[in-house]
Length: 211
Image 1 (cartoon, rainbow, N blue to C red):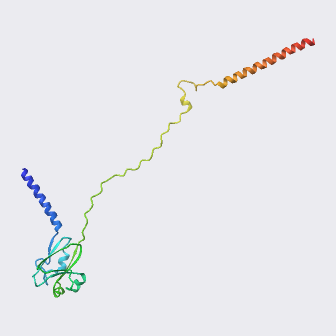
Image 2 (image 1 turned 45 degrees about the vertical axis):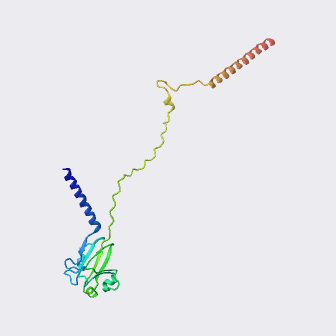
Image 3 (image 1 turned 60 degrees about the vertical axis):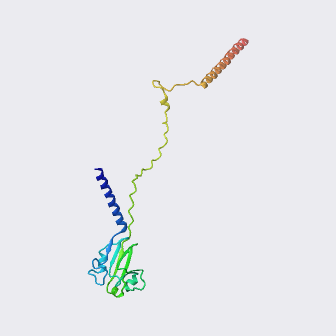
């Protein structure tokens, strides 16, 4: 049982590696299908290119008879004029391959200018490389900032609230000022009494002398 699981795991790893290797190497396209690189293909090269999608690292394969023809990678102007004088690259080994190393248009013509004028030429547009999408950012909820709480203050206590329960009113505290006022009042009354007594005594004395 364990050997079977190990074999299945190894097979899965090899399949993944093969798939990734295939992606890194790209696909191989045969120009013209079974006809190859000829002057009169059963399907025009422009139509063949339009129904395919080319990406960076893909490979195209040109099949032709060595020594009788060749493939030239040229500029846009040389493509439309079928000029073979200043090729960017020349392929002439009979089984020629070319790997797309960038996105954008590529222009191929026959090394024989007459063949190029008869339609043996090809434009391939390589799709732009799309960057891998970034993983979504982790969700982080935004918590609202808490408003500062006002400082707690002790409630004002009414003077009546400090009166003990069961009492009729606030406790009266005798004041020392009341004592001094009472003492001043007693001394004043005593002085008035002495004056009245002295006046009565003088009246009696004068009355005796006059009689």
